[in-house]
Image 1 (cartoon, rainbow, N blue to C red):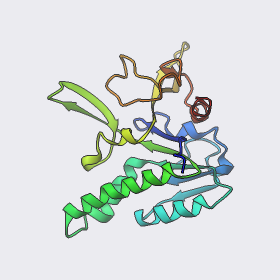
Image 2: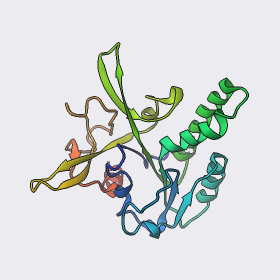
Image 3: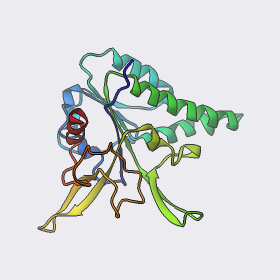
Image 4: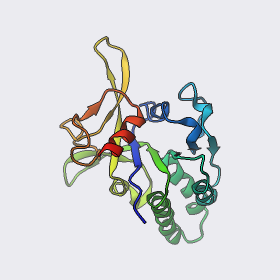
Length: 220
């Protein structure tokens, strides 16, 4: 089976434009899996998703994805956020386990099951994640990475060919705008941003439209 190339990891701090980057997607073909439990819409037409699923139990995720794989109306699947999904696993499976060592091993297996499912799926996947910045004393530098607990920290990005960061900046009129960092520069050297060589000509995109990323993947 050909590996699914349409898998994107979007990293960013809260309120940096992660969820609003979905606004121009074909919402009627998109299933939005909400683990962050959004209390307010991030963009006006958010309620037009094909399905907006609030995930309460981690055990429901894989069976749900298997059902969506058979759904011809679903073309895109969004998981918002991967950070909170793995936190939910810890709360429901690790913190309550008699054998926490075994539970942490199952935690990694759960993550791999999700990633392997996405890589063999016919759907396009978007994983959103919060970030964590930490200082490495041995390398004497700070590193900003996808936030997850346990030994997965710093290892998630290796599973994705396309890792972009949300960026907030002021335009020439001094108005706050949202975009993407898509290539490593001096300013983003401390992050894990990664895209295939030559996919983007510029290091940043001035608009945070996820469909621009999918278009670049298709044209690459």
